[in-house]
Amino acid sequence: MALAQTQGLGDPDWELYKKRFMKPDGRIVDTGNHDVSHSEGQGYGLFFASTFNDRTAFDKILEWTRNNLKHRDGNLHSWRWSPNAPHVPDTNNASDGDLMIAWALRRGALLWRVEAYLDQAKAIIRDLGEKCVRKIGSRLVLLPGMKGFDRPKAAIVNLSYYLMPALGRAASLDPSGPWKTVMDHGQQLLLASRFGLWGLPPDWLAIDRKSERIYPAASFAPRFSYDAIRIPLYFKWGKVMPASLKQSLYAVSQNYSMTALPGWIDLMTGERSAYNAPPGFRAVYLLALNGADALPDLPGLAESDDYYSASLTLLARIASMELV
Image (cartoon, rainbow, N blue to C red; front, top):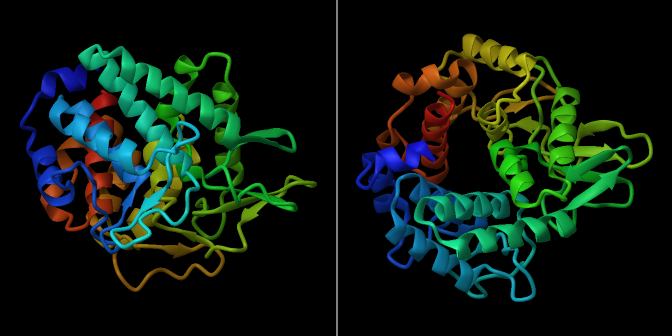
């Protein structure tokens, strides 16, 4: 918690983030996706507020999240809210959003000494373990949501939902839960999930239920893209990123240059996007390659016009400070 206590209110990046992406009622807006909101984005907002000691923003974001996304019959959250009615057409959760919310609640509880926040974090983690962790063959996996991913022939996994620092905190919140095993098996999955010329993990992964064969999920484009970019962020932050992934990212950055990174790479054909990745991708590459030493070279938040790139940039900045 040293970072939260030393930064205090008025951090310029956080103030800019709020100005651009936070509504007065506490809703975090995905400006690149028709101004919808996600449990992931609410989790980011709570995490940033708890990092930069902004309890006013934290409580607003938490209240909106509870009122609009929290399940009535449990402690998880619907993954998406739309400005158009019906606001929540799909009540399925997103494991990464719930993990981030719980992580932020724990940080807020420690910083502001609010026991209720800690109780809420524990309740989320317990529900997540019961509803979203499954045994697939010899592996214990974190499913992306409680519905739709545990399929008859294969389970669908998204390794960018493995927020390694948050999973470590989940293990402390729920000591008898599955979290240490989930982390260990997540590292094994990443080592086995490297495809194409660059040896990169896909956004979406399938695990065959019988053979345990691992392959890019057929129902999604086989790309290292907007989901998978968070894998090096979270695994580096959790100090469990394999050296081979660092080597792959270095090769990509050398081939395309750090200022012309691809928005996506097709892992089957090697094709890259016609457009360059936003600055938030560069922030993740720099963090993955340089750790704490990346801090002076990270792009400023002002370079990112959209919510997702800005979120990646601010997350990479916090991670680099916490890796010191």
